Image 1: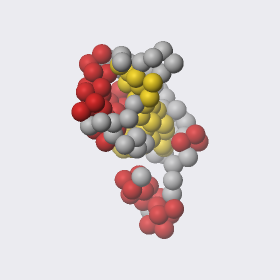
Image 2: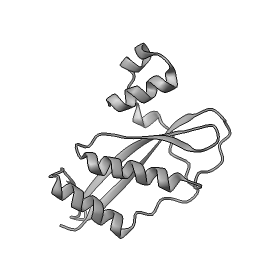
Image 3: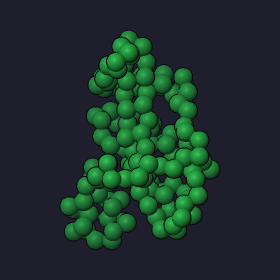
Image 4: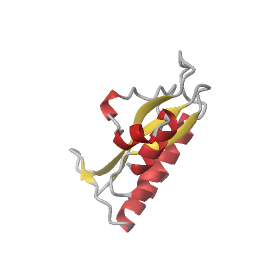
Length: 132
């Protein structure tokens, strides 16, 4: 959250505003992908390895598979380029940062044109799954 507050300071311009800022994840519009991201088997395996190695908590899905979802706030600049990706903390920093990097890569040359040239925050999420 502190990283997000620092980033908001850059966008809003004042420390007082950044001190009290929080993300209302539900109010952010979805990241406008042209084509939805495809998480490969290798990506799932990497997240599983990191989560297991670092003893991160995962949830069990209705299908009996383990899953880990990372929500991400993405700042897109006026030219349509991703400038910042902030993961929501899930107490698994390696997977959080991995998801942030993937979201940035998935967005490159894969966003729909926007009607505004102003920087804007969006949300997206990545879900990693693996068998028991």
